[in-house]
Length: 531
Image (cartoon, rainbow, N blue to C red; front, side, top):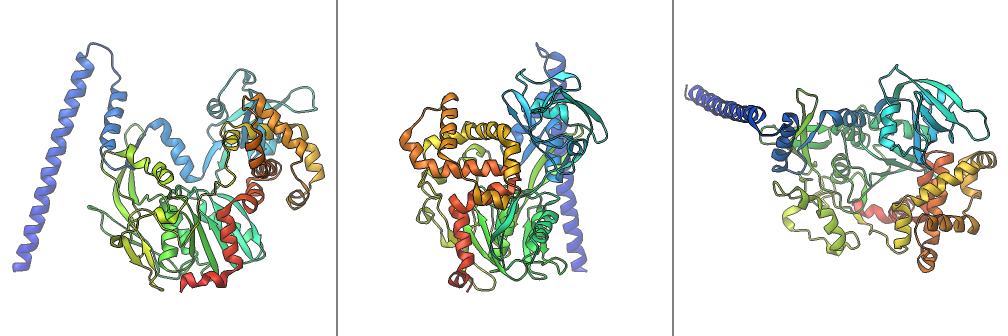
């Protein structure tokens, strides 16, 4: 009887709290609504109630944690497309080159490829409107070319060596957005896969990448550097490929959200056994940290790189009546050992929170492991080998790789930042596309035989001077090797795919990739990290 009374009292207390909260919300809504009505009817100038309401929502969210956010109805569709892994359009990768839309590559199987549009084509008109030489922006071109599946757009194209202009009618369709940036054999038996984001298609792409490599690898290097996260489900599926049945991947918990565990299943696990290295850096966040944290906590693989971003807050997304979205933080992610991924923050100090990354550079953390303070209060122990790991601010790697600035020069940085090397590559490819494709039938042949000659490098420097980047012989000499490798990678990307860019560049100048491969090839020397 006493238990029944206690339960009734608890229910009554909960009801009273909920009723009180509901009354407070109703009073607040009435107050705000009355204020907006008075403002719209009496203010001296005309005001946009819609814009003022949006600003009010944004201001409220800015007083909370750094990851609760508002997305306008206009931007909400693009956000959804990114996570779902597709959008509707004509299916071309393009760049604005000499104030003209240059087709870098038609997407395989997309609407443009199906009607015969080729890399190197210039789109000069869209639906009868001239877009060449008029200063149109990329975002405006995207709006013209994108549209609902099944709708039609007419384009007029200038093709090198062909007269007159060519007319194409393209029926828009679903265009995939890929998560896998690169996949290749880093060495015999060692697969390298770079995952750029976690979207609805990520797990399927990962499985496809493994299958397309042709045989089951002995070791996998999964590169999550720069991967800012995405969908929780996608990260759970990826982690599931590495973990044993019923091993915990991650759990979430919040004030109003009970603990929810996500565990590995017995249906995936295509790489439950084998050497595994995950690369992370200060820009690896959220879903990336879930995968890295789970692999580390279960002693399944070795984490290499630098401390990750530290984004471990769970947001629920709510659509408002006008189609806008509000993402509210409702819980925190915890790794299997119980580590909190989220780094510390103060409510309302969003700008300071995001400047933490800048502080990592200024305080030397990205250059030296000794710069990182690791209090015992954040220490945890892995679940099988009982190794010390740390929480409370991202995932700490097992093997630290500093940011490599040995060949850094401001000249090289400006060459990239100003877009000069990309523009030069476009110009070079535009003039030599057919010759290059005839000479190099395969990427293997290109990678073996093509090199950036001194004359081609000098052309790049001269091109940079015309773009108002002054020649600096000392800095050019210091960075020549790295610039040449980058240029070769960009040419490979244009002739083949983006995967080939990484296959050219990373083995030559990326110390994180080089360290991971070294560890794979000398696995017995590093296996002690898992003991």
